[in-house]
Amino acid sequence: MYRTMGGCRKMRVRNLAGAVAILAVTGGCTAPPDSSASRCLLRGVVRNIGYRTEHAGERTVKLVDGRYDNHDLRLDATLMDSVAYGDLDGDGTDEVVVVLVADTGGSGVFHYLTAISCRNGFATHIASAFMGDRVKVKRLSVGLETVVVDLIAHGENEALCCPTERVSRRYRLDGGRLAKIETHTKEVPK
Image 1 (tube, one colour):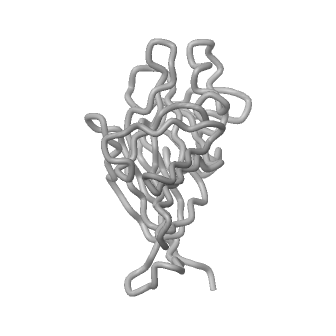
Image 2 (cartoon, helix red, strand yellow):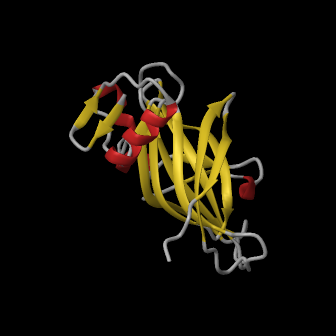
Image 3 (tube, helix red, strand yellow):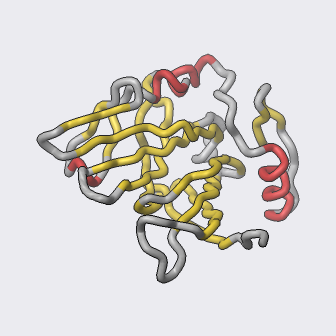
């Protein structure tokens, strides 16, 4: 199954290469779910829920209009514009994947891939994966219960300030966490 901007289309995919081709052509799942049960995953809702991040210790940070700022914790968290929808757990209903950025006041800017599900009618943060310090997320997509993230990350021996390596990573929901299952470095055209 893949989602276009206008809605969902179901397709039979015979292999991984076919799935990757579909994601490349469609850009993945970027439209909000159409079902009334998934209205809790709309962009305005997910910008105003609680998220867990290792930078807040055991606390859940409650975003308001996509932001959280706590001077005592030295934590500024922001929800980025990147968003993708799709079924991550195989239950037939969509989850939403977003990027949460945590800034602790130092030079680091920490990016987290974050999955949200509609639980009992409420948007609920269900899993995260640390993607890196000062990476640049270019695209998110969801297909075949997998999240694909295209980003600019740090290559070997690169300074943290200036990532240049084009990378595609795949993540899968695994026991309450987003597990990285594959990473590919992409060739940069000269």
